[in-house]
Length: 494
Image 1: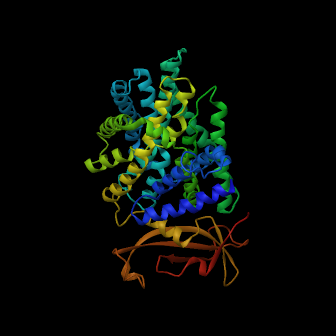
Image 2: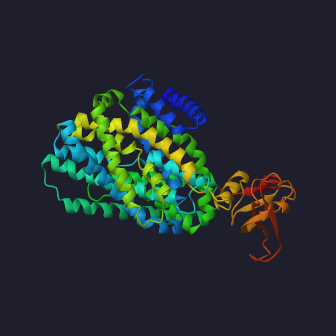
Image 3: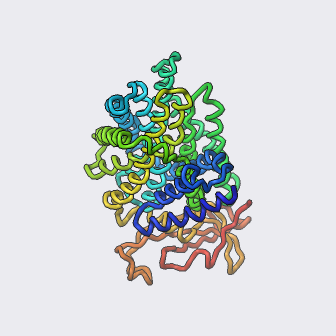
């Protein structure tokens, strides 16, 4: 397995670098590496790695969904909430209807089998979409209208909706008693419980981090451990009650962000570094699951079914955004962002075959084909069109986040030690300001007229002084000022 990990790292990083040089998303290169190294092409992956690939992919997906949660501001969610709900259901329904209409005459399968196929194809891939949206949010793109947040929220609920629909159709094929109404009722129950089982541990983690000043890596590992347990809880409880654990993972980040933005940003910064490795695992191993021989059997007819389904899906996505306040170009971006398929199709594509569905092998072939067609093309479309469409105002608040990460500045509540005088101080206030570049020495070459800067107030910690009393001082930090680490180091209890 160690050799397989080495291949994932070396070849994945190389492909990522090459594709970025070509102005293409690096994840496309990682997917191709996975396909070539997987058991269906050159077979370079050891069997042990393929046996545990599901767990590795789940952990990697948890990392990126946590990052997504730590970016979900309440005011932005309120602004896009209605559009996110309609986008979570309508596009998938349209795609299922489209497949049901064209698959029976083209593939010579029954309408129920076509419905099963449509429900597999109807899910968008969070593994592809979420990292790209996070990248836009990290750079402040689309912040004014909250478009990346809209797609993040919608794509997470979309998978829950589609999997429930798939379960209904598969149950109907098996001939057992299936209550459609009770099955549909699982959707809001699953979503509600998923959010609830995320908010509760998220709140306890926030209180724990408030009470004990742990180092950021330890806080990050605690959050990651709890998130993995949530996905285990979903597996344990699925016989009795459905839980959308991946929504719970996002809810953990959301509640910590709402309660303490400084703690949330510290953890998010560490997750960003962890994502470098998790991204390699996720996309290379997703690619390794793709059986190109099975996809080849689907042929041109299977390709036509996938494309017609995408056309119906695109119409549904556009209609679901009516009244959202987005203009035509914004809506087209959302349409493109809803094209990629990968994780759900790889996870459930083979289920009909195992369940004895007559056309199970054909359904699996088209599911695999949909990954090969839509994951790379969708990712490329998102990157290229997103750069043209998503706003990036000069005064974007994300520039402060970028500045803070580059300078590794402390947050309110953290304790620091003066390297020169060996005295301990506490951060009691921080203020984000835009300053004319004429006021900052060395900023003459800065592109904009205003430069982002952060003022930090230090209070000298002393047993004889009550909080808020005693000596304080303020320092300014911008990309042109002396580094924080030239004079200070952050102190932690553990």
